[in-house]
Length: 139
Ligand code: FES
Image (cartoon, rainbow, N blue to C red):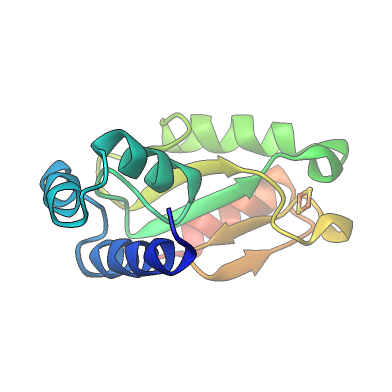
């Protein structure tokens, strides 16, 4: 696929994601027809970029890093705690649609790990109790 074509596609997917909070099967079908791109390719693009979702997400998207540097600072304990606390697995949304949990690769603050983002806000040097306090403070 040509570069400029890819840019246009990403912009269209971005607009849909921002407007509706996710990219539906109908959207994929429509884009596939309009741009003459196989649906499998579109699913590949959507799943490659963590900002795109195929299902409605919660009000708050928690992105928790579990890459090497954070893992050395016990991010796995936070992963386990948040899954238990929210009663959801990775890439799932709580029943009340408040939180979506995503375990992700490096968030670029490796020297301050463990790190998580909630929507656009970074939280560093996390502990399990600090992570829960942060989630509890969100309305
Ligand atoms: S490894 Fe976690 S922010 Fe880089």
